[in-house]
Image 1 (cartoon, rainbow, N blue to C red):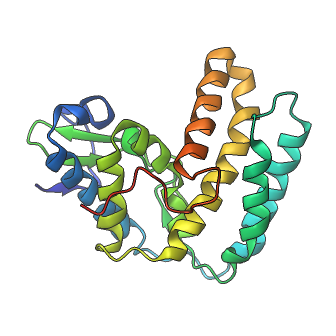
Image 2 (cartoon, rainbow, N blue to C red):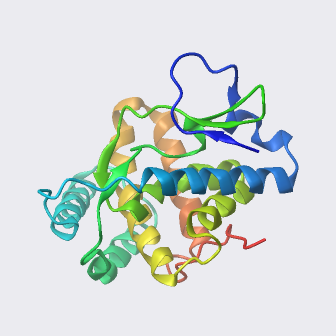
Length: 220
């Protein structure tokens, strides 16, 4: 199996999210490994030196999200658990590095072409930030194919995943979960329901934020 990181023009293939479950468990995991290795290559590009430190930048973003959630007329049943987790783990942002990021890295922005190669598409949100934070959209991967998501983490870390990564990932996912509800309101009841269901599933994965390692994860 091989992969393409950047490819101009037409890709003759199918959306990975739509076809991943046609593949065997071993193949799903293998594609996830490739996705993780590709992401590690993307993150090999350093951020410019003049950027604001990540701790200050992301704490400001989380403060804004908590404020907007508090003002939102809708609430999750257990939204406070995400807020409590954020407050207890802000310190993990200290001294985090910054690199180039794809900006929206998940299985919905990947394709499997006619030669069974994994292709990464849609770089229009590219930015710089904590490389580990880029994995926050793994929620979508885990919902589509848990083995793919597991492979992505293991491929990124070459099967040596540090515990602090899981804590940081849970922090980033908690932050995203809060903002998803008020973000969904302009798009109607269908999108609101999707975000409520996703928030419920996230809390189940993390045992109501008591366990930083999600239940979908497998070492294989």
